[in-house]
Image 1 (cartoon, one colour):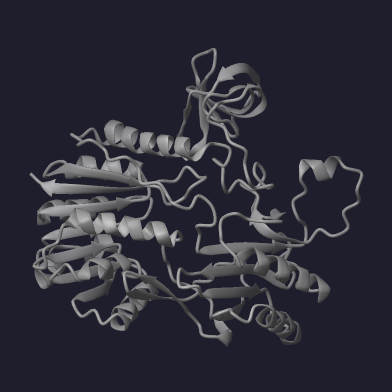
Image 2 (tube, rainbow, N blue to C red; image 1 turned 90 degrees about the vertical axis):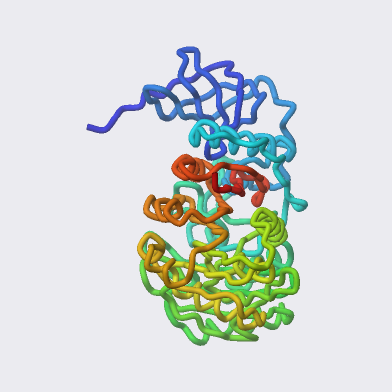
Length: 469
């Protein structure tokens, strides 16, 4: 039987913290923790709950009787509806404080290992317009805001090009502006939508799986190059060319104009054939003279400038002299591996995605780096004694796993290897802390450096240096 949630209103709650997933935290009169969607530490709020459990409530602030000094005015008109920049109402220095606190608490409470003083979080120079990749969805039934619903205005045009409403797989918020990606991103998105309407092209309906226009992806790079990819639900050569030609004419500086015909149930690109319409099929990112070829399916850190800072910290923690064999686990497209290669004797990168490894090899060739090797394989299967017997015992291991952290078998193999140093880069300090607890058997944590890659959100990266006991 489904659990019934009795909704209650909790009055005059003082918000005391910012917790996991960006939610604000308060205490209810009955002692339960209250996780709140839309408040800032220091606010005093009334909360409408929508979930009740033995130890906590979840809810939303419905009124604020006292505003926190940590608040700032959100710059985006879509704040509160979009859900993409949940901390835009909190001043940046306070965002950094709570990110630092999260890392510290996770490493202290979960890892429960001896820690050195944790370095102050490295903030992002850019707090807006820092992303190099954005994906927007088309919809023929846009999400109506509360103001639009309450108004007497009849809304005939329900076309939208924007983001999914949080938790709503078939609802799209139509964007006027987005502060995440620099120009020409907003201009491209606005033009594509306007031109599609002039041409009377149908916007996608996810629920009914019908329509012509599905998604728009825009990638930019620090070298000033731009990639535009349009995804169509079915082929309509005449209208497809009309729209793509219009984009090429309006934005002649575009480096790469691509399209894909995708008639399957979801809009993921990784199993699709990408077609080139104009320019070349890739753009270039650059870092310390290294060039990285980025195609439509490539993974690359979405904050280029802060990724450079993250990689420098990683290289500094590794403290290579030029004689070391380095393993780069979860290497992706090999950016970290190539970034540290000039300071190492040899670097071995391992990654489970074949396309990523092909890109890594191509980029190494492009950069004339000859002391790197890349291998495809599921980390928990390929990273074993046979692999290390073949390639040599690494002096230093760099690991940058996905949010779930490292598989227990990978941690066990690291313990068996007993390399002198491990540099652990993580986008989830909770799973990182879990792995540090396991590695504590042979390694001590000697350096910790949080890095803010995503201002206006609760996400935080963390780099840890472990040295053999």
